[in-house]
Length: 379
Image (cartoon, rainbow, N blue to C red):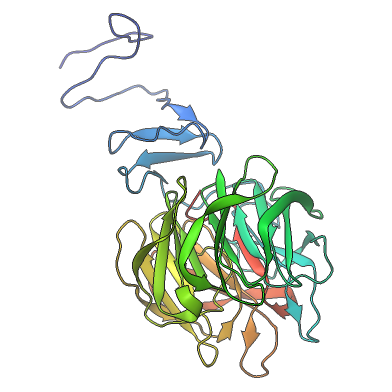
């Protein structure tokens, strides 16, 4: 076996490194430093299996091909964000909604997804009467857009720091009952209600502040659609007022949505906020003549119909949802008996299938709020 000892290796014209062919091993007791850069600096096309360190998410990621793109090596992120000591884990926010007295609230809770516990107060949204907002996020910012009474307002919170919201800009259209998704650079708000259902798709740049721009249209007018996203695709279920149809978009382009497949059950009024890792998206709960306990899932890189995942142990609709790469949490919602806002949080393990189990309680029983995290499958 040959041995090379060198501080630096370059090709003849010093434009890059040489190609190492065959079985190559490194026996250093020190370390190997892979290429590094932000989400914005990701190469858009790379050899499958390429490895890099993401300086935004502070994690290794690898390239799975042009359809899926870059995917984080799946492990629970460890970040100094959550409650408790030591404070670790992916942080989720649940904001707005309608309480048990049917009054709209501006409360924002937070949880640490890796730790099963009750939520704590994070801050307030700008309006005291906000329900049915849409959400999207980066690893540092969580955004809430629209809501009822009809508004075009977008506000944001910084995940690491508790406090009240900051103004971001405006949607292209005032509306409620929308949903959102994103890839850490681009945020998308889809559907909604203005007295009638809407086909609207807006997009914003999550790294800045400013107003939303037109992206395209859904295949059918939709409010309270169900949502999931990878780092390349956004999926929207319940198209055309609660059918089982699923649309998808490619997040970094613009244009109208395309058919993806069907959910197991047609419905609307599911969870606001993406519950997904980089490959699997889960459609949570909903309403179709009554509150449903349905969970179904899709593999987002491959078009097709959803499969059964399991059931909610506590049946609710109009919930919020958030996820880490391994776990999803479903927060609040309107229950069957009594049919009012609940303080229940439930969780699933995304990489398996099965029914939800109890996670803890939110600070104020309510429904029609929005959920978001700094660790979902689009990041």
